[in-house]
Image (cartoon, rainbow, N blue to C red; front, top):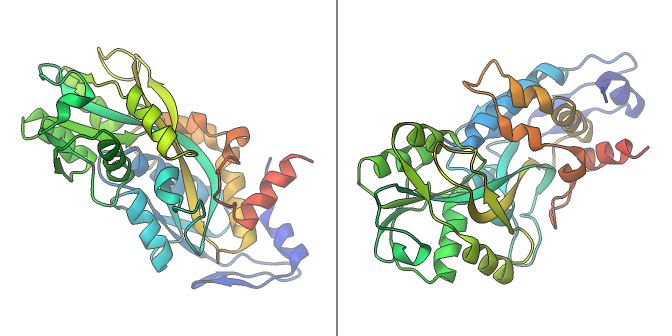
Length: 319
């Protein structure tokens, strides 16, 4: 479905302002420039790659909009920046977003669900670690500070229980440290495949440790954002299919973004998901996670409410 943004604004006859953003309209409106900041993730992460692709497509297809990506620690850091008004859009894992009472952080809403991340527990092929309990006392990367990986891996360890020597490293730093023997294992909550692990597996034999029991424990302790899943054998070189846990990722927006602007962003994401998946001028690789973006699952954001602009777009698809 294509969206003609100008007639939509003209019908509403609005002057919409939010946090320094301005969308102007009149009987024959001209779209003023809208400058948006999208919080992504650290080096070597899918968030960095898919965030860049989303920014490119929104800038190209939403009239007057320009989106700049902002590197970050990922999920928890992105939520913080959104609440502080430092960014307008941000990526997060669903478990890091849902508060203890099941609500969304104040002032934020979901644009849509994008794709699911899988929790990876990676070791070198020669490692003596064969199962989760072998992590006890080992040096483990728990992901970057304020990332979804940190949030979920700490939950997993607490439910274990396993006492490990935790390090807080980005995806790229984790892969390099694992390769160099500075850590014994790394957690990574990310899309499949993820760049940092792909590059490591192409140069050095690795293994993934099964996390099926941990998936069951998370599902029982925190109903809602977790589901059992499998990292397929096709994901990484010479690594067999491995059972683990999956967590949905959502694109968040501040509630004060104009409804028409969010409507147009939502339309762009679902209309151009195939382009995001297969090609992008501003990212080094295609973004295979974008193939999983679809209307049927996009509306499924659990207890996190949709932004009114996004909710209007999903309602229009049913007509």
